Length: 232
Image 1 (cartoon, helix red, strand yellow):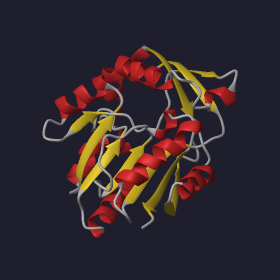
Image 2: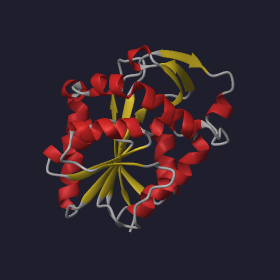
Image 3: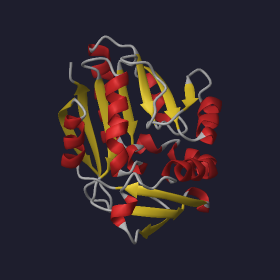
């Protein structure tokens, strides 16, 4: 949830938030390939300090069990720390990430779990093949124009009624990070969004939003967690 490194306010916010930036996927992949080891070190024990996020994940796991269980996709899994945490909660979780370097670390650190390289803009999963899905602070790099495509894929791969959990930074601006974890160069936008706006996107994509949790309200960049499910 924490943003670290050099952040530069974008000179053209409308362009930054647009899917017309053809290079955003490549820049995101390259940036996280570059910082993968440092990022993995940064987040390895971060969840231990986040009681509300652990509670949200525990509730998500309960919803998965109540829905009958099955494979759960952690989309934008990074080095796999959330995937592994869900596995400890009895969830059959697997991870997908855009960055091959992140996936290499996830497989190294969690050899018993399944991880694969992939993009949330074109999920290589069969229709209705997942019992649940979460995107924990990974939609933050997706420009506005690409959000309907991403949520469309989430809806497609989820079973009817399947739970969806989203976590993201709260705000109204897009910020360009030029330096990140470990002081390595990055070239990636962080899009901060209001929960009501994300909830409206979810409704348009065929989801019902059930609950909202705001966290870190005393921090510079608060976070939000939305619980939803795919409509039948």
